[in-house]
Image 1: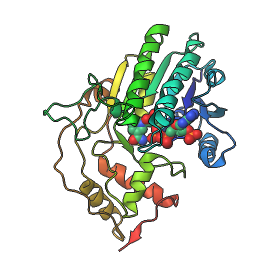
Image 2 (image 1 turned 135 degrees about the horizontal axis):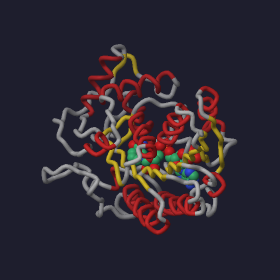
Image 3 (image 1 turned 60 degrees about the horizontal axis):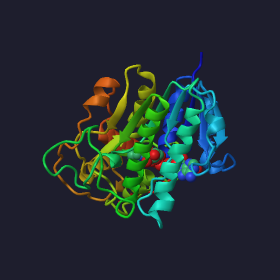
Image 4 (image 1 turned 120 degrees about the horizontal axis):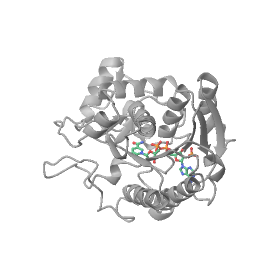
Length: 322
Ligand SMILES: NC(=O)c1ccc[n+]([C@@H]2O[C@H](COP(=O)([O-])OP(=O)(O)OC[C@H]3O[C@@H](n4cnc5c(N)ncnc54)[C@H](OP(=O)(O)O)[C@@H]3O)[C@@H](O)[C@H]2O)c1
């Protein structure tokens, strides 16, 4: 029997990769989007649905509307909840980040609670932001693991990070209350090949600025490949023993100098920011995801080069000639 999965935020950077990997495996995928008539946001999904073995359905749903996800979740076997706003600067942290993250998680998981007869597992996209306390990484030589929680961010100070902690806590509470099996993926900064021609995702915005030799300040030192994030979501749903949180990241920090070197080698005719040469240090214990989900991670150089290649091919980034 072909499994049915719903992917909330199916048109986003992370959501699209999850949709793609599920379609490759022959799933029937219900991708939720805010508007099915927004061609710029859904054209790449329709193309994936046409090209891959699984079956794609588009459903409209909004994180802020109660009951919005009920129809899309009804009768599915797996729920992948990726939708949540990811912006570094907003006008109002509560309205623009925390409300959609928390109310949205409640809405999606309330829909799950109404479909417990079919739902086997829920996979939530949280973040390293819900784990890490300091922008610089651990200060005491310790590495971060799934045991750690960010207890310092607030709605006034780092509202994005706070939105991810608050939404993840709601999810764990609701899983306990309603008795469904929840796995949580906590990705670090996600980069890698893009499928959609959208430019509004933070990951794309940051890397486009780097490729166009405008700004190297946005590259976050803890990085993970989008293909590994997609795989971690699918494996968290499929591996029978998978449970709890999964911190999905390369274990070492990566300096922007590494991005410069990889890109300059792959694209010798273009100029990229020199980047800062900071020595790598171990920040993340990623052994749980490697061992329990049987994952191998893409090398960061491949992540940088493949992201640049796709951004250039889709006309999203215009690199500068020497
Ligand atoms: N990118 C990273 O480095 C990273 C790292 C860790 C965790 N994450 C998490 O990954 C998830 C996806 O992020 P992303 O990087 O893929 O960003 P993205 O491309 O901006 O995707 C965000 C998604 O959330 C949806 N969304 C936002 N507000 C919504 C609302 N009110 N109702 C319904 N859908 C709404 C968007 O829908 P539209 O398509 O309609 O705009 C979009 O599909 C988020 O949970 C984020 O916290 C991302």
